[in-house]
Length: 462
Ligand code: ARG
Image (cartoon, rainbow, N blue to C red; front, side, top):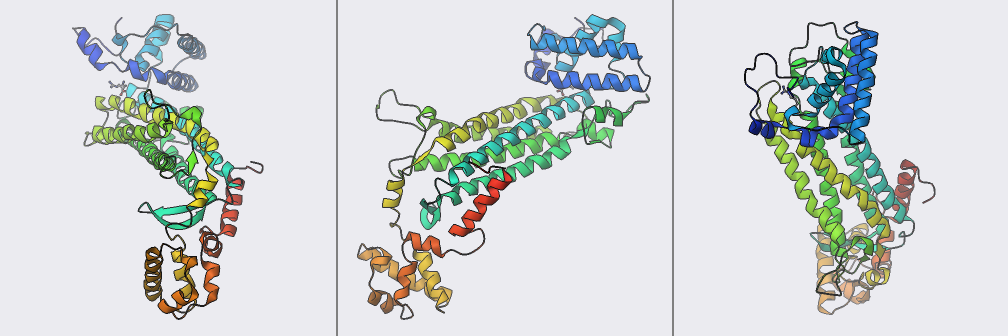
């Protein structure tokens, strides 16, 4: 089968080894829907400007749809000889329609075609992923009411820092995934520009209508410079970066909950459906879903690196190197989508070990900052207050006491400004109650944030 792109200039056929080396059909066949939709829109445009007749256009569209059905029903033959998805579909069209099929590639090149297909694919993938991120946010928000009264230690440097309400943790993840959604939406704007009609590199002398084809494919606009179109893979890199960022956020969450599920922390129990056992240690319930989520992040970051290096310093315009962008890009989407499919289920199924959490909550002097702020409110300069509370914590550690168990004399010896009102700010519950600032873990602030998120995700009843 001669490839449609191998013109009369060739006197030798392609070496078999070269065919295997150069093929992309093994991974770009997943672009078949986009390729066919792009071709149908192109044929309709060719018809509208009179480059093909109404009847030819109809025949081309019918056969393209037939080809799509054949592919869906796995009746379509794939062969490395035809290199990529574009040539497979065009050759099948020619096989079925003869000379009429040979007209489809009018005013078009595989360079603008591949960019079109990939943009349509990424656009759909972005929309799917946005839905998955919302589902994950919903899972976190869905826990907020039932976990509203749970206080957890917040950590910095993985050392106990200050007490917070559990929903404050859950909503922190919602914020991160919201920024990811914003990045996806921003990336989508640049994805959604129509390259079709830029042809190989310089455009065409044929009277095509680029606006028409862009409209048919629901692109927002037409890319302005044919040379840029031919050489632009920014959108691939941007998507790969956003995916790496999502994977980073997922890995942070996974790592935190892996720690929390250990005997050492004992904060949570993970849903067993997403854990595995050990073949030798019968007591083990391993957090594999979270470990793999954390582990797969490596691939997603690696893919971004691959793409950055792939595109670096390529001369304008199209270079065949671009073909190598697809395995990395597809893998990033597949990997992050797989993680996002399970993540909400793990969030929903996680059980907090409330008693184990609260039993140890008074350890680690989580209320020290609250005490320091009490002093500040009594006119003690911050640095002095910090120093005094440091001394009091030192005293409490020495006597193996909590701050609330120190006597008023102990407090006054270190800081004469203190009075018995101090006890109302000690202990984690009091410390949480004392928060005031916007965005803090103050109960009234967290409540407002929960309401805002429910509203945003349109969840009145969770
Ligand atoms: N398979 C190619 C790719 O993914 C399609 C474009 C080929 N264009 C060309 N001029 N050889 O980039």
